[in-house]
Every structure is written in C-alpha cells, then in structure tokens.
Length: 635
Image (cartoon, rainbow, N blue to C red; front, side, top):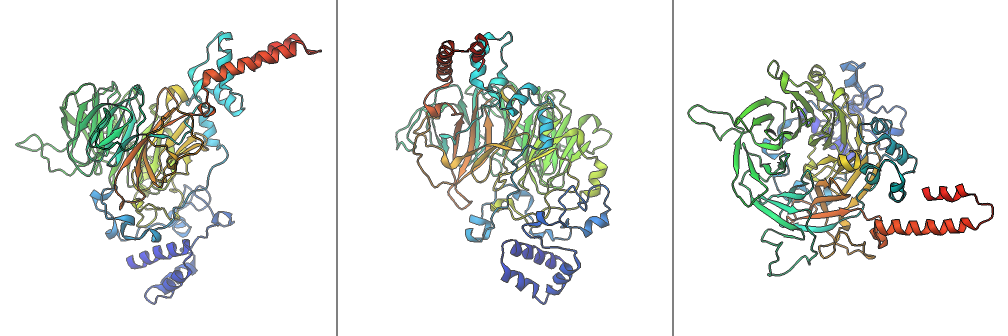
C-alpha cells in the first residue's frame, strides 16, 4: 500500500508537469498499474486538470462535498478531498530537520532543471466581502478614513493645506494610512551569513538583526545613513567589522552563545532594554540593549532533575520566544512543547505537550492580560491556550484549522481577537479567535492529512496542491501571491498609530515583499531584485537607470517603522542552499514625491501657488460668484 501511495504521488506530479510518457509508464507498470487504473476508473482518485475550477463538477472547499459539517466522513472519503493517511512516514524529516538547517546542496538531491515550478493561487483583484467587513468594523482604523479612501477622496496635500482652517486637527492616521513604502529599497547592511531576524524596536528608535554566525546587531535608526561603496578593501570604517558592513550607526554587537543551527528567533522587552534569543536548544538567553555589557543570562526550559537544578539533556529545543506585555514572563515554543517562564520567580510555570510536530512560532494573543497563548506548528494547526483553565484540563481552548501544510509564523494584532499566520501552503490567513474550532471538532480531524505527500518547502518549489484548504477551515481571510519556501517566512500587521493595522505584509522566497489590504488585494509589491547598492542614499530620488544585478533574494523578515512609511527587509542572497551564504538588509521608503525631486512641503507650496493663480483668474472671469472662489480653497 505504501508503494502504491508513492506511485500515486509520482503519477500526480507527472500529470501536473505534462510528462505524458511518465504517466503512461506508471499506468503500464504491471506491479501496481492495474490498481491505479482501477482507482481512477472507480472515481476514488481523480487527476484534476489545471482548469478544474471551470469544470461544473468541481467543488472548492466550502461547497458541496468538501467535508464541512453536513457531510459524513464516508462522503468525504468518496469526494475529491484526498487524505494522505496511508503514506509511509519513513521519508519524513527528523525532528531536527524541520527548519532549513540541513544543507545537502542545491535542490536537495535534484538538479535545478528537475525542480518543479511553484504553483500560485489565483490572484485577488477585487475587494473581498470578509475583508471589507473588517475594514468597516472600526477595529482596524478610522471608518471615515476608510470611506474616503474607497471613494478616492483622501487627498493628503489637501488635508495638509487646509488643516489650519479646521476646528479639529486631522489625525495622524488620516495623513499617513495611504502613504506606504513603495520603493525597491537601498542596501544599508551586508553580512557574510544569513540574517534570520530583522525588526524595529517598538518605538523604532533602533533596528536589530540576528545572523546565523550567532551575532546580534543593534543599529541606531535615528542616526543619519552614510552611503558607501560595498567593498572598501582593507581599510576599516566606523561601521565595518569582520562580520558585516553597514551604512547605519552600530550601537552594539552581541556575540551570542552557540546553540543549534542558528539563532531562530529573538524578541525585545516592552521597554526595549532587554533582548531574548533562541537557537534550538533548551536555553533561551537574555541580554541587554542599552549599554556595552556583554553579560547574558541563561533561561533553562528543561525539566528539573533530582540532585541538580536542571538537566541539560532534555530535547526541548526552543524555536520561538516572546516577552509578555509586562516583560515579566516569556513564552517559548519548541519540539512539540509550549512553555511559560516567570522571570520574577525564576522558574518555569507552564509546560504543555501541545502539538504533534515542531512549534515554529508562538505568541501572546493580547497585550493586556497575558492569559491567552497561541502556538503554531508544522502539524498545520494553531492552538489557543487559556492559562486559567490549564489546571483543570491540559487541552486547548480552541484550534484554528485551515492550513494544509506547516505554519511558519504567527503574529497577533494585540487585541486578543485577531491573528495572522504564514503557511507552507503558500497562504497567509487571518483568524478571529471568536470563530475558532472547539477541541472536540479538532480531535475528529487531527489525524487526517490534507497536504501534499512528501512535500518539503525547503526544496524551493510548491507543486499543485491536492486540497486548497482544510475542510474545517475557520479563517476569516486568505492572502496569496508570495512564496513561503526555503525558510520560515514571517508576516506582520502594519503599525497601529500610522495605519490602523489595516495592512498585512510578508517576505517571500522570490525576493518580493507583499503588502495586502485587509480586503485581500495586493496594494504594493516591493522587488528586492531592484534594490540599489550601498553607494546610494535610501532617501534620494530614484535614478533614471537602475543598476542591474543577478542575485536572487529570499526575503525572510520585514519590519515597518512605527512612525514613518519605511520598511526594512532582511534578504538572503543566492537561489539555493548550494550557493555561498550572505545576506543584505535593505531600507524601503515611500518615494511618491521624492521621485519628482521635491518633498511634501514643496508640493504643498506649489499647490498653494496654483490655487492662488486660479483664484485670481476666477476673480476677473465674467459670471463668477464669490462662492466659487471660496470653494476653490477646499481643493
């Protein structure tokens, strides 16, 4: 049965890639060709054509035959949903291999010409009803601003020009929500290793990165940027050392303690004075960001042992870690486990056997109570845990079901309701905790696999999926267009103060940064293949002829400035694991006006001058009323 299942996988892949001779060879194989033909003939398994959505008999998830409530389990098995329960797991990766850590060369045993092309979900061109409901709910920014934006009636220059005549000043959100980064960026930092984390502090006063050489770098985000040539020979500059070259002022470089493959996650305390980082070991280290001290405090998540305080042999490798809102606790997710550590009591207070696979990401659901925890795993599920009920039952309060492949990252809006997650099924999903599935519903489906058999996202390609969503999908919105491949690509909400968190953004393995509106549309795509070298200044007008380069970039992490329309992206160079390792941090700014060689103040002055000329012409025009001249001041 296992060999038959593997043959079926080969048959689907050959069919999807148009290899008709390979399809015929598999069907004519005397060992299992007859069984495959029998299955195909009985309708138990179907080779779906590329234009299946135009087929009147095709039912996407959420319609008849998709396995939602109302269909019996027998009916589900007879429909197009293909459950990979009988696939042999011998070829699955070991517990230590669920990230991109095992470098076995380009293409993972296959030449680049043999790698499958990446399947992309259908693009969204029109606002989706679910997303519009979110935008008009009042939970993602001002409703009045949303209405004006939809009606194309939100002119920033006009708002600035008339703000002195208003009784109530315009809000910051009205001025900045529609001003989003739109440039392909300029390189500001380069490393000789891959950067896994790149984030602004909460007040955007500094920017920090974590690199695979176990160094953490902190840069002054308020200091001026100094353009420089990428290669300066042997001469050192104030912002250059053996590990990297920077156009930004370096505040501090921390030499992390060696752990697993790399530093997989890091996070700042609410006051931005402490930093924690994880590296796939039992230990999470905490250091400070405000002075030159090199002291690092080890926080051990292993089990206590008799005779000694801790045993360092417990295989609870931590992949993800986050401070609580008050900075007194840490949540950590690792090898199937979720932990909470109380820093004041100096002890671990929560340990949950949470998932059937590695936990790639975890977070707190809100910034107030700290009672609700969220974990995201390679088992395709997000689980929600309420600490107030863990004592009576070690079961989740609810489960978010929808992804068909493992989850790379989860990020909370901070209000205790909304989350977003990136999945290896190439979809970013938005969740409402009020609509999560119960644990009883989860237990009825937890052992059924709706993903692609033997799929490995690290190979850099995603074949056509068997199922576009889990039958019990409870996500509110889905966002597509990016490639969640090669590494654990991250996603985030846009800043609350300047955008009302009405945008969602993510990196991509194809080097493009996607910014979505909550309504599902892609509003901006920034392409790292067009990033300018370090000799340019990020705020300068775009040059008429861009320098070309052949580097293919994989953007793992992106961070949006909390006060300005600026993005920082951490991109890996090279198209595969066989290439030499290096990475570039790029700064992306809004250049809607600087491309025209003047700034917003110049634009406002120009508009005022044009309005004055228009008023003068109207004053001497026959048949012009005073109201026409006065009304002109409003536009």
